[in-house]
Length: 193
Length: 131
Image 1 (tube, each protein chain N blue to C red):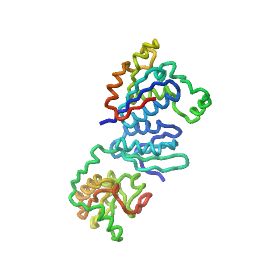
Image 2: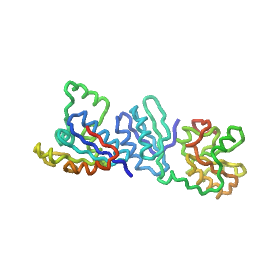
Image 3: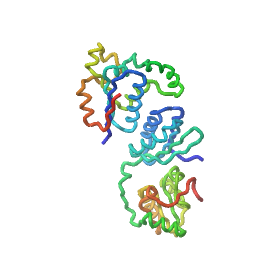
Image 4: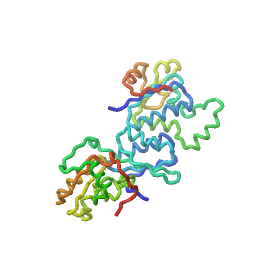
């Protein structure tokens, strides 16, 4: 499976601390929100990358093992991301959404995170359009349907909900918070269409 | 605020060098502010000639091959990488005087200072290490 990323770092065959050094240098070239793939054969990099992300504030998305190669996925954090700055007024709590999902209600969930984040775990049945592609893919959505927009913390989904409202979608809810607090089941893998 | 890591390098073997520079570069890559104080035999780790062939502990010479096989960067490579990432090197003036060394004997871009130069940096350190 190929996951869309913005930059790939080849740290294969390198030992500690090189995978981390390469990761840091690559991260400097990215814009907030972009996704980095770090390929490494150093087994220690699995723990190191996670520790690095925790200490630098960037988001560790997950790791895929392919033979001897570990592919780590990281997303560059936005300095303001941690702050919850909600502007879209119609919100629904994550808990409430979870109840609907568990009661098998017909809910349309729109997941606007990056592909790598979606692949590593999303709500079963959630439709995936990354925030950056939303505008050009509006035709995939139904204006008459209730749409629950979700992301990782509630920020990107807030922007997405605002975009949808501007385009005439009237039954849009932003789910707060996001997948970081999701307690229900998750599905891994690509878009479920 | 950035984390601050203060390291004292007081030994001059190859193992010591890897411990010092691996921790230093990893910390710098994790956006910490790092300074290393090189004193006594630790000065070998940044000495232009000595750092190219630092000794292995006696009886462990066969490990040299292991370093090559594991594709570990050389000490001069780690030194320039650390400097590139902003790790500050402080060479101990007193030791240099005792050993008859001058700043020219060492890699470029180092500071020379006394114990207080290091202590001034270390007093606000979050992590202090001695090797």
